[in-house]
Image (cartoon, rainbow, N blue to C red; front, side, top):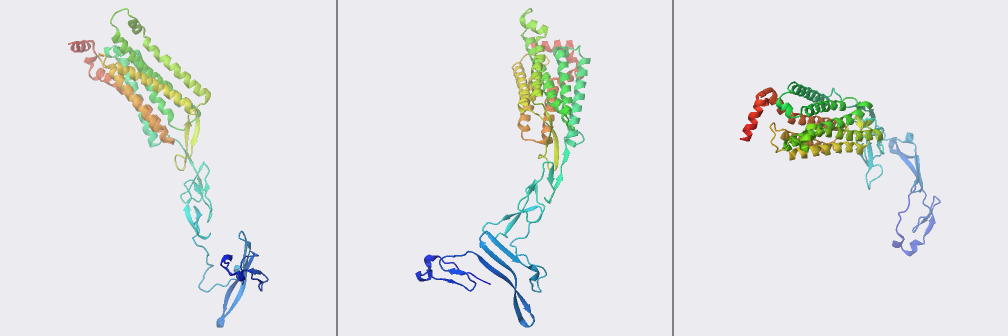
Length: 433
């Protein structure tokens, strides 16, 4: 075996020693102040013990190096004679091997065999020992708990059979039945003063629109398809436009009714002709144009969400053009804000059945629900996002139904004397006194 002299910086050598150069027994040139040849060659020997204390060096390999980056090691493991205490070949490792599901990170300042094993990230795996890098799973797959192989994701959606879907479905159907019952009560008692005072036609339109609002929430549940994705947002935008514009028309009717002081005035002609009802088709047509532009440019379509829920691919309806969606929603919000403003300004009119106050409170509930929806909608994904939108539809529709119609149903069914003409005159005279 050969060994090299330690390299000493030339400035620390005696001038005479710096000039010494010679050739050793291996034929290599040796100098104290520089290394003329950087190639090193080592023989690797194994000490073999024989009986009677006799030992023998046996060459089992060699190591040669021309430079730091060009090295070769030859080792014949079969010729190695290990002591009896060794049952297996010892591992010359600083750290334990990193199994599948882990990757190794070298430890700074330590030999290359020293490293730390860390678990692969959430969506990555490693399927062999001492992996340098983890491999990401495909979008339609997810890693198992051991992070050593990928599993196919399950396709899911907010279905009717799930607890959340079942709860929303029951709410939608119950509110639909309640709305139909209220409509039946208003039709049956259409000749009572309380129904006539609240404009029967507008009440019927509003109740039918609310019934459609409750039913359109069911379009958001179940397995998405092309038809439901197109109908979801379009039906929602159109039926809510009818509902909110009807509330605005009812509010305008209340204001016109109490502004009439002399027969023949323009306001009286507007009231008698039902001009306030024309706001419904006007606002509906504007929303219809916006929805038509949406469908013509970038309509909703079926999409997948592979990252919101671990191990699942969620089928959702992509809204297509986000700009068109917010235009429809913004138009509806502007209409709701205008209805609330008009109703608020008319809240102190001397309405016998407090119609203006009910309209004001109903629009306050409606606007509060959709402001909350906008704040929550952007922080949710997957099924929860769909559930938030369905709940907002149900809550805002229930707010309109409860605030406007339930007090009147209470009077019609439980306090009929207050809805009769005699009771109406008695209430008016008591307010006048």
